[in-house]
Structure formats: structure tokens, C-alpha cells
Length: 411
Length: 112
Picture 1 (cartoon, each protein chain N blue to C red):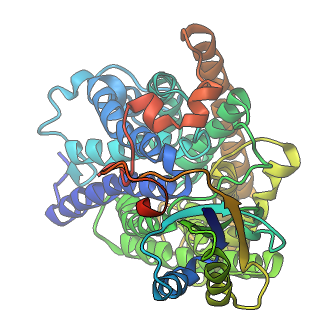
Picture 2: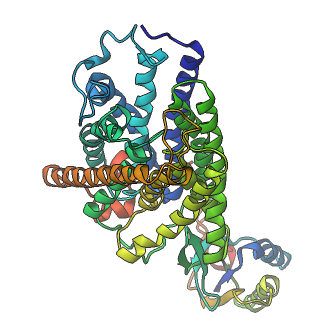
């Protein structure tokens, strides 16, 4: 019987609460960036993730993701349906139920990330269908591959807190879905400026705060690796902000608040897979590169003509790929005995290759299955997945939820 | 009777109101409006994407006056609203057939 550690347990429980707080933070981050007529629809799509994913997780989600731990395979099993009989189990040095709730918070925020790409035009019933099917058909298997000792983990790919499982996964799904949904009417000629950047900056602060739970909690213990991951998270966000602002100032003339917020998030995304596997100055390099490259990646949507409303592809897909691949260079086994050395630390190119395979596998799987889910919903739902032209013009708040975000003129 | 309509810079609205009150004006209507003239709009940049904002915010002032008073009121508006920079606005006068006071049904000069 493995021994329970009360310090580790306390930290993982607190970290889980920190991570759950990221989803409302993400809702505000995105909500501030959309136009005022769509703010509630954005908040709702994010909040709903906390509802639907939690229930799925308890009934069979955890079991399919984490059943048959370490089988080197594609999916878990049905041994833990309804989380029955787990009350006295121990995983590592923490109660299994603490592990269950910690992993649940990842499952909640991952599909929520997709909402930024599809903003302003997806019908509510279509989102309900998409997040339900995507969580089951995409998130659960990928979480098993990487976090539960599935085939990618077995091969030797590293992902400390979800560079592939969370960010590449959600970013690829976002890309698939926006290609099926199509552009918003008027994009990119009509201005669609953020309606409240203060909300976006508040959301960024909450994300940054919660990310300490995300990354440092992934040590699953209150130990030195957790402290290293905590520090790396802090530093990469800071460097990401600076990287973005420098390039933004040079390319478009101003350092903006939206740029500061976006750069910090880009740094956080990129450090996620690396957090407990790198040390020293590496997080400055990883975060700085992410801030600069993610800013430049935004121009891709104009070049290729896909309407990624709030740049989920540029920040999460590109940032997630960057972090996962850079780990193949910067991984330092002296930081974490469970890690390996990357190319810059005498480990050769083996890890780098495994990181590429992990990124490619998750990207292709998520892209294809997300597209299939999107196309099936488009064919099956009576009104399709996209708001009508009239609904889009009036805004999703009033047409999808019969509410108004700011009833300033009616008092 | 005349209707005077003035489109001015929003921060000048109090100066114009005080100038008109000093000349005995007892009522006027103010609206927030947007538009463009020679000033054109401005540019905003979000995540490197430039948006041209064509419509600049302005304030529109409307008041009805006797024929004789109209020229001095227009002069007062122009003097109070002017900064000398592009985008100061426009003022115009149109004839009005009749004016009624809703509460009493009075017409013409008595209704003003």
C-alpha cells in the first residue's frame, strides 16, 4: 500500500481549485475581446464546460482516460464507472480522488479554449453537441496517450502539464471547426474590435494565477519539482509578455495592453509541457520565443483566409507546438529524475524526435476527429451549427440566450 | 422660424451651451452622433491587425429660434465650438413651418 502524504494531498487539492478558476478567467479573457453583443455567449460557452465535462468525467470520463493506467495503449477502460469504490485508493502519494479532481480541471478547460476561435457565430445547441462529443472522442483518448501512460508516454515523449493534451489538442480542434463554420460576415474588412480590454486583462491575471496550479500542481507533490515548475511558469509568462511587446512595437508601432495580455498567455502555453523538466534561464528563452512567434503567427489567418476570431490557432496551437518541440532541446534531467535530457543537455536528438511524433499524432487526430464531429453536427442539427445572418448581426447573446450583457440603456 | 443644427466636437458642448444660454436660449436638444468629414477617422491596431475607424464621435445640437435671432446664435455657436483644427464641425439653418408645445398646444413664438 503506497503511503499517503498530507502535504502533497493539500497542494494537489489547492492546485485543482486554482485550475478550475482558470476557466472563468479564460471566459473573461475571451469575453472582453468579442463585441458587446456576443459577450454572454462567450462566457456561457466557457462556463458550460464546467457543467457538462464534470458530469461526463464522473460517469465514465475518468475511467476511459485513466483506466488501465500505463498500458501503453490507446484508451482506458470501464473499471471506474461512476467513480465507485475509489474512496480509499491512493495514486502516488495522494488520494486517487484528489487525482481525479485534478485531472478533471484539465478536461474542463481544454475544450473551453476552443471557444475563442469560433466566437460570434456558432449556435448554442451546436456548441453543446460539440463539447460533449469532443470531450469523449478526442480529449479522453489523448489524455490517456500522454497522461495515463498510453502509447505516446510509453515511447518517451514528455509533456509535463499538457502542451500536447491541452494546447495542441484544443488548437487543432479550433482550426478544424473554424474551417467548417466559415468566416464571420464582414471579416476581415469590417472592424470587430474588443469591447472591453479591461475584462481581457482581468482574465489574463486570473489565468496567470491559476496556471501555477496547472503547472506546479502537475508535479502531483509539494516538492522541488513543483517549485521549479512554479518558477518556470512565472518566468515564461513574463518573458512571453516582453517578447510579444518588442515584436509588436517594431511591427505595428505601439505596445498594446492586448499585446501584453496575449504575450503572457503565449509564454504560459509554451512553458506548460516544459514546466517541470527545464531549469535555469530556459524558461526565459522558451517564453520569449513563444511571445514573439505567436505574435507573428497571427498573420497566418490573413494569409490563408481562415477566421480564427481570437487567435486560438496562433496562441494555443502554435504556442503548444513550440513548447513541446523546444522541450526536446531544453529538457534537463537534473531538474527532474522522471525527465530526460534534450539535445542542448547532452541527450541527443531522440527526445526531440519523440516530441515531434507526439505533436504530430495529437494534431492530426484532433484535427480529423474534430472535423468529423463538426460535419456530423452540421448535417444532423435541424438549424445546422452556424447562426443565421440575422442572428449573427443581432448578436448571439439575444438570439441564443435571450439576454443582454450590458442593459445600460433600459434603466 | 428656423431650425439650427450644429455638429461639434464633444468636448465643446458645454462651451456652446453656455454661449447660447447667455444669449437667452431657453432650450435645445443634444445627441451623440458619429460621422466623418474632412477629418476622416482614425486607426486602431489589435494584435497587429489595423482597423480603420471611419466614424468619429461628435455631438449634434438642435434648437428652434425666431428668424431674427438665428444669425447671432449661429455666430455664438461657431465662436464657442471653434478650435481652429480640422474636425470642428458644421452648422446649418433650415426653415421651420410650425412649432407646438405639447403640454399646452401653444404654437409659434409662444411655444418656444
